Amino acid sequence: MGTAATDEELLIQQDAASFELFYDRYFERLLAFFSRRTPDAELAADLTAETFAAALAARRRYRRRGRGAESWLFAIAYHKLADAQRRGCAEDRARRRLGMERVELTDDDIVRIERLGQSDSVGALVRELPGDQPEAIEAHVIEERGYGEIAAELETSEAVVRKRVSRGLAAIRRRLGGVS
Image 1 (tube, rainbow, N blue to C red):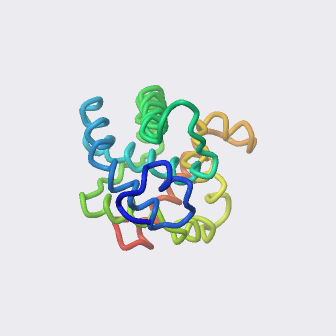
Image 2 (cartoon, rainbow, N blue to C red; image 1 turned 90 degrees about the vertical axis):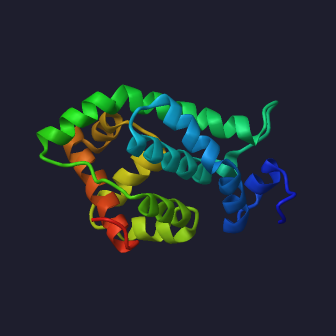
């Protein structure tokens, strides 16, 4: 599919190259969108990555219903931003309580993770994680569910779910050659 393809055509294709073109079209605009709405550059990068991960996971369900692919992508972005604003303070407190530091990513780390996130290799890395980490990552990152909801479903505490997600994402970063 060439660069002349519409956003909708790129989304309905199930190959990595088509999604990469879609990603390339919107990466800078989406990062700028988040950068204008949060003073934390790291959070803006995280939200950009989460939005594209969610779009990649949901693209099979994409249907043009009066709005185009750009509106669909930015609706996901608004949802990610609202979630981050709701959970931001609580997550910072929980991270401090658990003695966990936020992993600081370089620009190169972020680009590498996002690019790799568009291929099936990241899905394989998630599936290779030990124990309950894959389930926690899928529920929180892909399905966009809150820690409390996941904890209730798994009959465990939010702290345990947070730790599973954090450890799993750190393991994926290490395997991708990023930060620990």
